[in-house]
Image 1 (cartoon, rainbow, N blue to C red):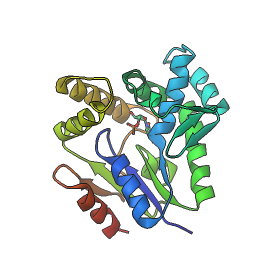
Image 2 (tube, protein in one colour):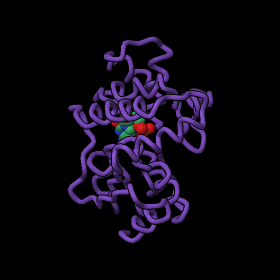
Image 3 (cartoon, rainbow, N blue to C red):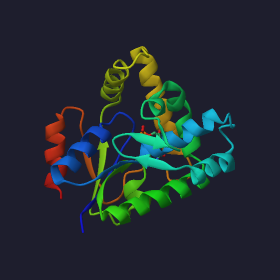
Image 4 (cartoon, protein in one colour):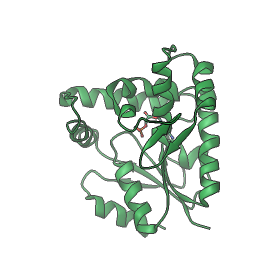
Length: 213
Ligand code: DC
């Protein structure tokens, strides 16, 4: 049986980079649950559903065929790039707030953990809701300006250029929606190790995480 490591935190805290690096170091599988919420959001946008239509979104979630590995494949289509567009960024917090959508994706996440016998799972509610019995819970955070800077660096690799202010505003809007929603808000689990990555390199954060295992 492999360990189950939960990595939660706000947007831009470096979760994906750290989760992937920790998984590689330990030879474990990695699951990005944010990509799952993004995949449902893409389907909602394509179906032109209203963002407050929780039942419609949940139906799309239940019916979708989803592979979430290096590439994200929904109903046979590679959507790895499409789930990272500003349109999805702008809508994902509203889709992820529907309890029926969360029920379906949480069930799939638990099934993933069972099939893989552990792994590194990143998201917002992994240590609090999805895997409350995780072997290690990490809450990764960073200063809002640093998070906006990282997010901006990621975006400028694509063709969409946004001002620093717009990036910071978008992150803080998403944080407050993710933290204030009724269903499984972003919270620090009581038994989580809190790591502030503002002044740390990727290697430093990975070492810190591994030191708690
Ligand atoms: O990690 P990310 O930024 O790609 O996640 C996208 C959105 O999905 C995020 O704004 C909130 C939601 N999310 C969630 O509600 N629960 C999770 N476990 C992971 C992501």
